[in-house]
Length: 489
Image (cartoon, rainbow, N blue to C red; front, top):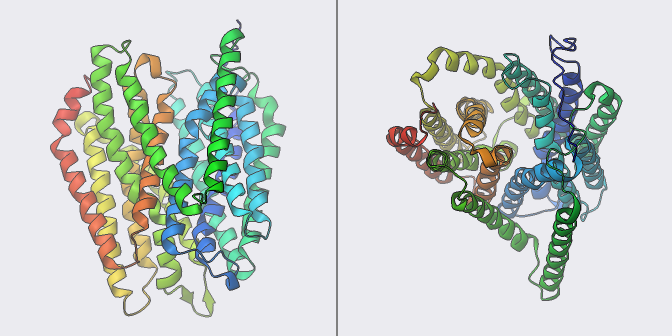
């Protein structure tokens, strides 16, 4: 069995801001993919809740919020099988290409001006993103030696591409949705993903052998047996769905609820499998106990944070005064606030953590993130209270997003780094998918919680207080969690 190992390109050329030129291909691919994702996401809930006369589906807010939450959750959950497909079957290079094509097909499907197009379009985007998202990050890592001092800088440039696409997209799709129709906004997302695929193919020669072969390919009887089980599982799933449809139990609401709790079940089963693995050493088992705490804290954080695209987006559309002079800007434009704040804040946060060093632990940073997240929703409660009598300034939402971004910068990059440090040896390549799973769980549960929202102050106040209390609980358990981490800071 021959496995092609990635050849670090950092010593071969430094023509892209001092980094391998291959990084430019991956940077632009991810930028356009995130353009398509965030462009569509910015108008999704607005489309679902808009009346049929206004070009929407006329869905109740509760159902739309739940559908949005489970969709975003599925995008991150799909990273687990997507990583497996690349590792065992296709390799990262082809997985990213096929994933990009499937995502583009999903957006083109949503661009068809019919009621039915939205659901198959979302399914295709979930499947494609599962193939692309984890594997393009792996390819970025393959450009550098593991101990390279420029590795973190390369990922930082890549991260800027994500937020650049996320910043630009809502400005375009939001304006088109407001001035023409939602499906035209979806079509722009499709064009963006098409650019991603084209430039990925054109720039492929720069990638050399990066991600060409699976790292642990399925061969012989194992391949036949595994593919047989996958095929059988798909047939069983299709039969179950068909039976549910025949007896009238299949509806958007029931499917959304089922997928939400399925996501939670996946997390429980996955951690159970790890803890039952006898190959884990005592130190690794202790570190995984610490990681479960961090996983739960992260899921609680994303449960609130990612309501920016659902509950807060609806609030922006219904309750904010977005008129400047004779111009009223689209509610979706406020979805660009988050990424621009991240672009500004990420270097500052990085410098702060370097200065503080080991004096501030990872559990402490997670606690700060939860408290900031809670304070953002307590601030939203004040905005919602004022909105009972008049439309409020959009600056309320800008302030809310600023608090949330400060929290994200305390949790997201730190958690990703800690995932690699705490990972057991036998699960090192899978733990990135487990970190994405925390987002999937948070988003799926958040969608269920968002069904309770009426846009009033009590909803935001209760969730804000709960998040702050969890943050203080995290502070209290910091010493215990650090002891479980066994020497990892």
